[in-house]
Image 1 (cartoon, rainbow, N blue to C red):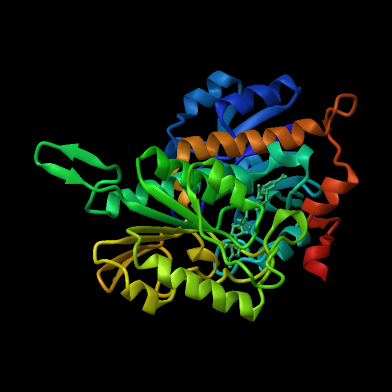
Image 2 (tube, helix red, strand yellow):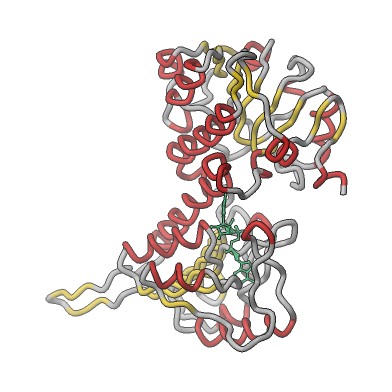
Length: 378
Ligand code: NAD
């Protein structure tokens, strides 16, 4: 059983899909590990560290040659793994609904044509036993943390209240919109930095979580059908009545905020628009907005993926691939997600993983030359 670890090819991608720690663990399971030269460099892991852990280091064609499982953070260019054997597993965040160069349906079709079994880690079901395999959670948590640091770096005032001999500096007011995994970490991080934090979500279950982190919940009340929670704990799209009430509430609140962090996503749909240009115009100049949903269409009017733009004196931060900005920790957690996934299904007699139906059917995009994922076929 040979496992290949690729060096990422996408622009700005600094993460890697295996660390020396997970290399060692795979070897303990009986696998041979081959790591592409330079794969860990941008996450501060030298080739020698992989060798010390027991892996061989080679070029792309060398690591892919004869591999049974190919690991990536994002899906590789199909042409770059053309020598992969039919039936090999490709395990990565494959972004099958993506557009542009990275991900997208055309790539999935190419993986199918090459006879690969492509497993999309972001399709991991949200069930208790799969929590340790969930790349969306592990990476969102880091994004929420980094979003607050990015906001603090762009903000020309301090976060905590400071009482000094020269006078008092008041605490920053931070508003977090969308309290999933990223939002919860953003609240906790902003609190640690000493900000006054408030937060909102459409799922009323988050109210308790906001309070438990010492922040103030800002919620639409008295509108019918506000539960907002769909399957798997994800949000649903809200009624027009709710959206209007939410816009009014946000308008009155946002004008008093210094920092806004938006994280709201609805699976399979563009990100909901939560902050309008008119609302930005009411904020104090020098305020900062970080839109973590910018690559899914954006929560904030005027946000641009990959740029920091200024509107009405307010900076709107739209960094792409925020987890990659914390490449070392993001790689460590991503790699553990992959190891937890493959090791949970390891069949000792066969010396390879065998997936069960619940998780296998959820993550498998292609097999035997065909697209097999219900999410892609329906
Ligand atoms: P997400 O990334 O899909 O969305 C981020 C947040 O935006 C969510 O809280 C969502 O409710 C919110 N949102 C959507 N539309 C909004 C709007 N119009 N206004 C305000 N907020 C809006 O969510 P997530 O981070 O993946 O987490 C969703 C839930 O799933 C959480 O409760 C999380 O704990 C749970 N979860 C469970 C597992 C598991 O059991 N394996 C794994 C991950 C997450």
